[in-house]
Image (cartoon, rainbow over all chains, first blue to last red; front, side, top):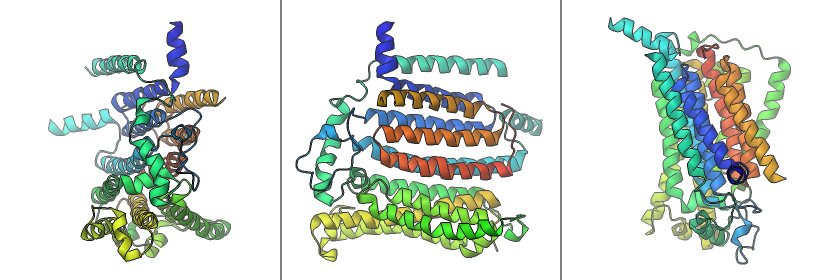
Length: 131
Length: 246
Length: 81
């Protein structure tokens, strides 16, 4: 138990926080009835995954991956962060906002059609339409 | 029925969380420079980016040169998302029906007029300095787009729509992606790989590293145009519900 | 010291995330999400990823909040949960 606390809570807290945020996001997407809360949950889920990637690419004591001019030859790789996860996540953020915009457009359409953005009220209306 | 399924959701979340947390113990130590991740392509990029394309900011170099096809398709995805928003919200309604109360005071309007040029200048700075400091095409596009949104917020959507009609802004978005694709095609026609900027050397007539640096800049201009237009169009369509004809 | 900052920021992050999905008022939820975005932007900057932090500050905290508010304007401000 003590080693668990020392290794995971203090040493790997970034991963633990990413897991907690993934669970919060997933909880909002599955459990909440309001579609707006589901979209917020989706955003939190996405940032949790980005946090996980950035944490994987982190090196203790290293600087941002901006190399001073003319220093390319006398290069030491532990001085700079790993740029690969950062690049992958940079594009993911921009695509994320595009996805959020599309989700919000659908939300407005749903509200126009049913007058509500609550999942259970919309399901009730659909059942009434069927009957 | 509904209650039971909601309880099941909580139970499944707990099980999923248990597996995720137990997986953390098997991950390599956080922040250790000798982790397996750091033995991959990242080292090559760090060593060669500054020499091969005069770009001290490795992230920009990897984004627009080494992994340019990735960025190309991401930009296309952003454009398609913009199209999807327009298709979902499109209506034949007229903008004149859109009720809007613009009660911005004189001070607010004047200070916004003073504020917008520095914001756009900063966006261009971010674009041009993407090689040397944090920044690049995506950030520049978002800042330019938010300067347009600021105008819509302060002066009203109708006036902004007269200045920047969506029909023209859609063309700008497509033009941005076309810049990216056409630079790739020019490299291809010159005899190299798709998006291999060093093939532009005979056109630009500078050193190879400088050519690749300029290639990154051209591509980022295209990215920023697309991102700017898509963000502006998304805001306009969300706020007017697609009634943008005038 | 940096590890402590990291720990505190991540705790605040989890707190704001819970708050953003727990509050009943939609506008409050969106602005809490904006605060969440700024906090995670600080975490990225502290983990040595200034490009990602810059993008998150402009996109996540700036534009997506505006889009959310625009959508709430045409839907409803209250939510049942």
